[in-house]
Amino acid sequence: MGSYKDLTVYNKAFTTAMEIFEKTKRFPKEEVYSLTDQVRRSSRSVCVNLGEGYRKRMYQKHFMAKVSDADMENTETSIWLDFALACKYLDEDSHSRLQVYNGEVGKLLGHMLKYPEKYGAK
Image (cartoon, rainbow, N blue to C red; front, side, top):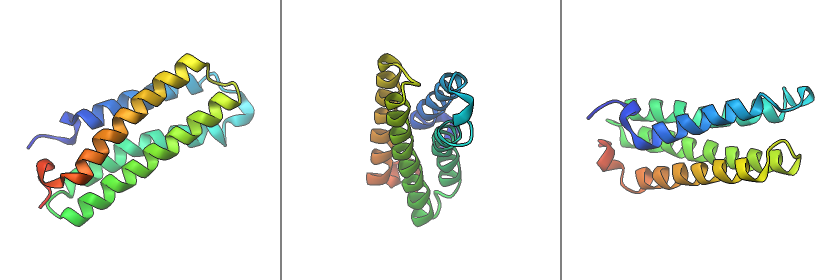
């Protein structure tokens, strides 16, 4: 098996996190320690948890816990994106695109949770 960086889910999550980073550069300064920080942190945590989980795939329970954490962070990111839209920090198109990406990551994480053995978890 290759690296976690070879996983489609990792690459989609990384691309999403980087786009969120670019979009949040335009958020108001008063949001820097709340919404901006939170959405950046949760989107990046998806990737971090995937990497950690993949390295622990020889222990299926550890793998599943980390993938579950990644899924939780992905859901948190979706909620922060909704707040960003409601606060008018994101336009509809950006929000929709990011939510589509987020949904794709969620489906891939769900597949990992359902079929951990396909990812080398034992």
